[in-house]
Length: 494
Image 1 (cartoon, helix red, strand yellow):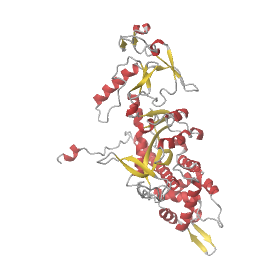
Image 2 (cartoon, rainbow, N blue to C red):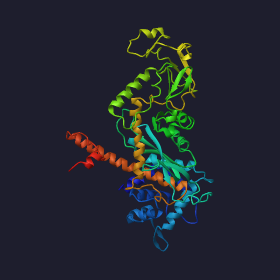
Image 3 (spheres, one colour):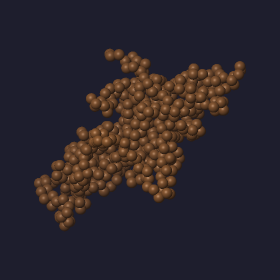
Image 4 (tube, rainbow, N blue to C red):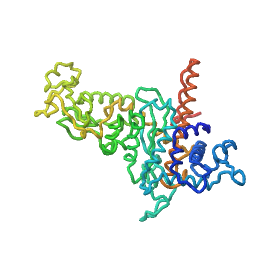
């Protein structure tokens, strides 16, 4: 159980409660339940693995000690004696909070005030000593089903008009995907920097959007606003669902904000995709027109690839890198940069570049250059426009070993969603929250992610103390046991 003082510190550091109170309408008499106490009751409820029901919030507040109840206003002195908070008061205050944080005309996207409140809650749940532990973030989205029943066929009337039909991947026997009625929940989770130490996987930003909206376009403004809040962006890891979007929806805004993309390419974006000044456009790079055809068509190794298969694959990607036109300048203010022929950079031998023929013969050699050499073969350098590689360019060559090792950090996003979907915990399945509408659902989901951050920090500190204790005793760090059992192990005789 997370201590009450820790949860109060998170709410106080966020500054969300005073801003919400300033937005709430003034009534005839003062409300007994303040926004601060309401947020604290929600966090206490979710920290105890309870569902996000207002009845549970009321129970959590009334179960506190008498001292805490009086301090938080749950128990107040009225004209006829002490009065304990009622469920009706809890429901009323939450309704007022949801009302002032909602849009006047709900459209399936959060209001600016709601997004700021949620950002501040998440950022306050990250301790100061961990805010600069890593600049790398892993982004992903998941399904969040509403409690409302979908509208009957041919109509649009239901209890949650902001929700919409969406598609999710089901890891169950049968079809690979299924439909659900609700929202897309997006999150950016902190992961370790390349060649850096391990860090706790804390959620830094999140948002919620109706399934009628693109989750990538809904989440991009949240991420690009982080530098203005004093949080510089580093590596941004994302799967092909993000990389396959138009460049102006994901890649260009993130690069402009200072992020370095590390992403998986969609199968439709892999391999040769035309030419630029005669150079082959493939996997976010430009290659010599005489590159062996099989090399630009390389894809990532499969999940079942053996160590021997990986060695062969890495050898081929290393060979492919020799044919890549090298970047010799960074992007200017308009996004243009210059590249140079690989033969001019002494990476390959080519008859069109006589000086390269003096290089060692361990480099690839172009013995049959084009009869009519294009500009990439005749000019010393080329100027590349920003729209040529805008969608697929990234930090590492795709699908090289460096890219594979860097992209492996994206699993932190999967673990983050697995933690809040665990059936032994809060389990944000349908019925976890019976309040309908984007604003209540986003506020409760963000609060759950802030609580999950506190659990992660507690586990992280415990593990670090255990490692320090073992190191003082001359023992190696504790390793995790493999829990998965194979069929061979299950069928083996006792």
